[in-house]
Length: 220
Image 1: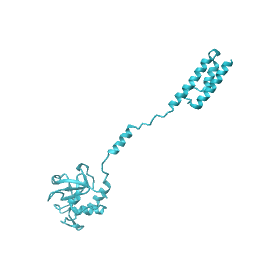
Image 2: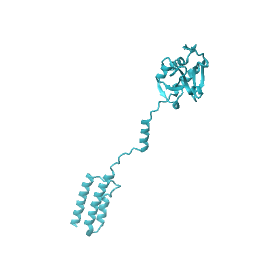
Image 3: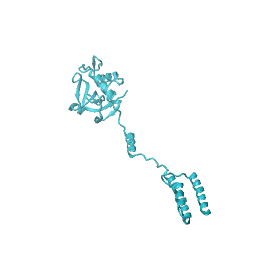
Image 4: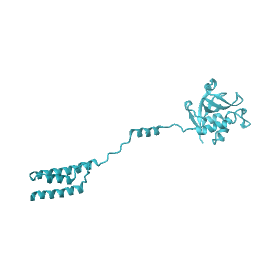
């Protein structure tokens, strides 16, 4: 009986030390009180074996509990990685529709105005002074001639044209010699020497298709 009590006392001391050093989780191991109750209910002949089982159970519960408490490293979802990569590779030019619509609205106020070779006033423009003036009214400064305007700005592929982009043609001499504002749906507004006024034409007309040489986009 004395040996049995000594064993219980020893178990309590060991359990207390183990609990202070390696805290257990309720979900992963049985409590020391439950194990002691099981041991006390056993016969004295198997008490040593029961106490040993109790001690092993407590130790394993603490070890497993501590191991399972270790958080798993965070995993970045594949969708997030793909989205970030797509953003990094997205090199498209910003949408120009806001300023583009304003440019077209300004240009349309001159529909029917006479074409004047070398003219630079509202009484009469030529093609490049017309684009220069409309741009200036919207806060964008351009040089005077079509060739000079073509030499600056951001080159734009024909498939990526936006409203307000300038489109250029080679007509009476090599290089950019005519210019107008792209309006969308293959239409553009320009001061035409052939029409003798500011007018709207279609980019798919054979003359303009054959003489088209490129487009430029400008920002404030």
